[in-house]
Length: 263
Ligand code: PEP
Image (cartoon, rainbow, N blue to C red):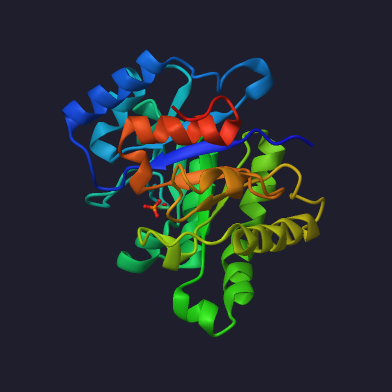
């Protein structure tokens, strides 16, 4: 089965209103950049802060989807500061991250919380992107696979439901030690972990491995993206720092999809 690649940008708590508009203008001016040609399809997604979801959804060209960086596990109520899946959809977004390591680290989100968030997102019609990844300490203690198995195991039912609903769901492997450090996983390490995740997905009843896209995230840039995406089980990227500048993001799209030399 051919899996459409995804190039996604996570802006985290960065950029202001004027930046969002200028970013959208830069993407629109660049055109679909060959990335949307029928033989060269790619899903391009940006994850702005929640206050700019509506703005981004309106301003971005139609080949760019918009998603939320987090989604609450309940469908509404007394949860000050949080955002419900229905509100994200209402703002014009169609994707949502669940379980980014910064949410797990700074907001104490457990595997079970992440599964509930992903389920809620899916139920509202959003494409959930479930983030998994080990810390440096866990890698050094040879716990990588055990950690990933627990993180992935918690969401297998949601991923299965996503396949059944036709909406699809996505897994993002983001080693914590590679996020924002400039120290990307080598293509060999990333490929080996992605192969492990794919096998786990295939091992679930019915097999989810063919249909579930697995992204790599962690210091992806224009210099390393081609080597990473050349690996069989790497279906695209979740990019933090290098997605903040539209020219850099476009370069990665072009290089990763083979739709140009990145210039
Ligand atoms: C991220 O935050 O998801 C990420 C991968 O960040 P960076 O690309 O900056 O490492």
